[in-house]
Length: 306
Image 1 (tube, rainbow, N blue to C red):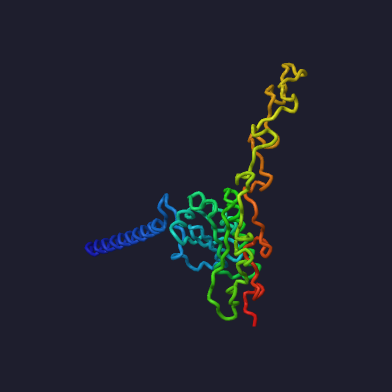
Image 2: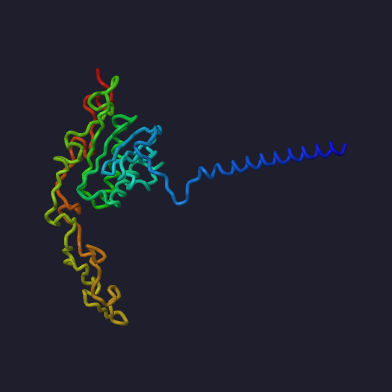
């Protein structure tokens, strides 16, 4: 009888032990799963490349080519989904950008700024904007393309690269069904009045002779000194009405910062080029400087007229 009881106790203890081991193993496996999914500290997500990009349900694909070469994918609301890097230079320039959820013009501006920062873009080098895939056609697509163009233009202006032209292109897709065979279903053409360069004669700027392209000239009020005689004391630095006999306006110096060039700069904006450093470049009368024009065959519908 005692032998039976002992055997039963041993079996029960063995069952408890095996159950505990099974739970321990299960908990250990559960605990390791999140660790495998966690990113190593200090690492960054790899930028999306043309080879790795999947169909993210984008509405429009706009290519910005400076070499770096990259596509911006946007959703139907005009928000950016991601930047697709198409070469190693693009990975270098744009790999640290965080475009998701931002507007197209903001991301286009950041891309140009990054290209300048990494040394890929200098003055006079063109920035090409290409309309590729799009759900939109005609005016809606033009508005999207202009948003990218305006972001680029703002960055070029802020980086003092106004001589870098923005060049428009449109991909020549396969014509299917009732798609317009002139604009490839986009409802837009590259403006033939300026060849997609915004200005007549292909961005035909000439350097301003008055300022030698600097956009500024020597201040005529202070002759470039940045200083002028104090209005209060006429340059004497004295004022008999004050207890110490010194002019309070100029602290007895007799001089003050020039009111025209400000802060003692000694320069003023060039009157001929209005600070641009260049002359000419009249906006194209056909597209108004927008780079693109409505397709004259389908009237912007993207559909073939029978």
